[in-house]
Structures are given as C-alpha cells and as structure tokens.
Image (cartoon, rainbow, N blue to C red; front, side):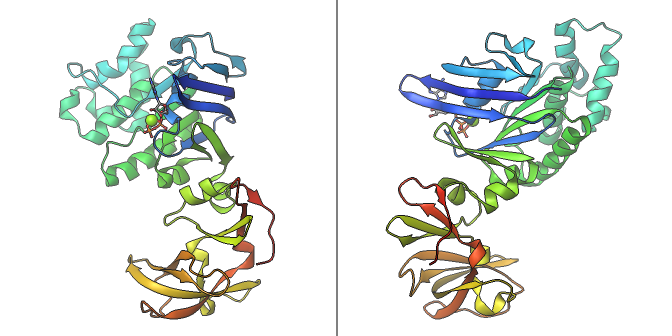
Length: 344
Ligand SMILES: Nc1ncnc2c1ncn2[C@@H]1O[C@H](COP(=O)(O)OP(=O)(O)OP(=O)(O)O)[C@@H](O)[C@H]1O
Ligand SMILES: [Mg+2]
C-alpha cells in the first residue's frame, strides 16, 4: 500500500491554468474524493498522479517517493476512467487476465488472480461471457476487476459510475466502498456529484479553478466550509448567504432556518422575519422560498422543513423564523474566506 502526495503541482495548457498549485496528501488506505464543478482540474490532477500527464511544475509522490520521472506502469497504480473500454471480442476472463499476461505473470498463476478479482466484485459467474452479453453494471464491475487484478498500491477512479442509471449507481457505489474497505487500498475518486462524494469519501478535497479550496471529512466541508465557494457548492439547496455588514457575509443552512416553534429550545436563537413567496413539496421535506425582513431586508433565502413539521405556509405571508446562533457561519466579503463569529 502507499500514500499519494502532490506538492505545489501545476499544469498549464497554453493560457489555461488547469491545476494551479495543489498540495494534497492522502492517508494510508484512505478513500479520498476530488469534488468540484466541471473544468476545475480534477481529471488533470488525477492524470498527473497516474503519470499520463507531466506537471508543468511541482512534485508527485507515491509511497513517499518522487515519481515525476516514472512512467505510469512503474507507479503501481490502477486507473479506471469514465469511458472504460473492455475488449469486445474477448471474454470476461480474458479481459481481466489481459493486464496479467502483458505483465508476464506465469500462466498457472493467472486463473487464481482472476478468481480473486472477480470474487471481489461478485462476477465470478460471468467469466465466459463477452462484454455485449453483460448489463452496464456488470461491465462496470469487469472494468474495476481488470483494474485491480494486478494488486495496485493506489486506485485512481475518474467518475467511474457516471454512465450507470441512478439505481445501479447506488448499488455500484455501495460495492465499491465495501471493496475498498475490504482490501484497504488508497483510493482517489473523482466526481462532480456531491452526494457521491459525501457518501463515499473518508475525506473530500473540494476543488475550484485548479485549486483545492478545502480538504476535510464530509462533516467538516459541509458543516464548517472554509469559504463561500465550498458553502455554496455543497448542499442542495446550498447554504443561504446574506450580507451582514459592509465587509462581512453570514451563511446558514436551509435545514437550520426553521419556524421558531420548530426549534427545540436549546441554545440561543437568532430571530428572522421570513416572507414566504413559494412553497415546494418534495415528499420528505418542503422547501420554502422567500425573502428576509428586518435585519437583512430583501435577502433571498430558502428554508428546508422536514414534513414532520405540520405547519402550513402561504405565499405572500410573513412568518417568525429563527436560526440557532451556533449555526451562523461568517465570511469575509472580499476574499470569501471564513472569519470569526460576530454579533448580528
Ligand atoms: N489537453 C488539454 N488541452 C487544453 N486544455 C485542457 C486540456 N485538458 C484539460 N484542459 C482544460 O483544463 C481545465 C481542467 O480540465 P479537467 O479535465 O481537469 O477538468 P475536470 O475537473 O475533470 O472537469 P469535468 O468534471 O468536466 O471532467 C479545463 O478548463 C479544460 O478545458
Ligand atoms: Mg474530468
């Protein structure tokens, strides 16, 4: 096993700064997610770790050793892309055995290793089929088995589940996590899907514009965002952010913005008058769209009420809402960075 480290890694393509000074260290056996919007540099960073792209500057380390000059096959990594390709004319067995053959593994060893890899993903019964005789999810698992059969030290995955339907995605996510826990392989997983990131990651590196904005556990990046970008990127709907003063913004999550009577009474509450403009019913929750009155006049905000709150709301009317004081997050207006709490 091994850790992966990026030290001040940059990659420019002409004028484009695809990766703009990333410092990152995984822990041994960790599941680390790179999360960020399209174009933020996730794939480029992963390709540099894999050795498929040379950094413009900076260092990549695997297992504590600088690997900038090592070719991909010498890095003990396996990578699965969004558009993984199986060999259509080969059976599942041959597809998975292929990298072993290429590596010169003795013929008698190959079936044992293939059995191990297919066992991990529960596809041992599909060995004689061709890819076109498999479902999308099964093909996905074959691609993953093929990637791990060489027992890599690091597993790099670039949106490997994105061409599965929603239901298959959930089960594939579950299998992937179980597999990763079982063999404890250091994994870097790229996605722009925050649900996937929150569910899979031991830690999440939230990226934007070629930089890592924050690296932390799912609870840290969600609950204690380092800046307004992270606050606005995570959560659906995202954190409400309103102007608190000339140089200061204040944010609070829609699920903490509740009618006064729905708060449990522990801790200090900050009262906010809320004029509801629209109600959206989502089954388990209701979203109330509207604007604040009094303290933050006309600031647009959203409240998320669990459907267990049985109060009724009408568009156009004003209601007494509140946020627990400890749930207010403050940001410096010019830089967007978190600042110390202050009275509102
Ligand atoms: N070979 C290349 N030549 C020029 N520009 C490139 C090249 N590869 C990537 N870029 C640019 O670098 C930036 C980062 O691209 P990258 O593919 O790393 O983004 P990403 O975060 O993986 O996005 P997505 O979620 O859409 O896959 C983008 O602006 C992209 O247009
Ligand atoms: Mg990408």
